[in-house]
Length: 122
Image (cartoon, rainbow, N blue to C red; front, side, top):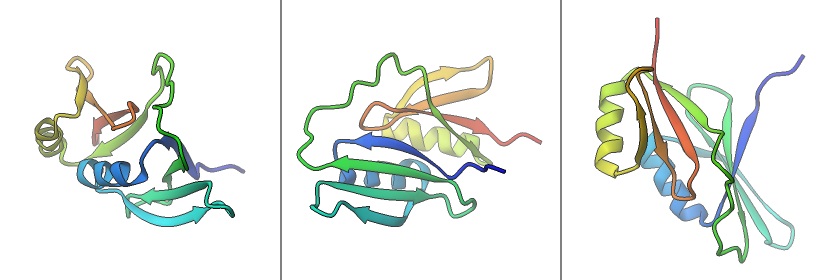
């Protein structure tokens, strides 16, 4: 049997990403790991409700943004406060695409990753 554990985003700045994910999605670090030579740092973020984590990886010395190709992938979050989160994300200026027909929208993190926000459905 398999179950989901985590998903990874490579980021240029852990500090910048931690600030964004805390403010935008209330995600907090649940564990960290550093390379033996300090050449990389991993921070796993949790939502406090599930065991699934978002792993942020920072490689020391990386300054150039990662090439995300055509961005035809995304991570999705469900919220029971869709309107409130929409207003939060609008105020942060991170909404990058809205699909009114499907009733969802996407935010973009500082490294260009897209995150879908989905209302909780009954």
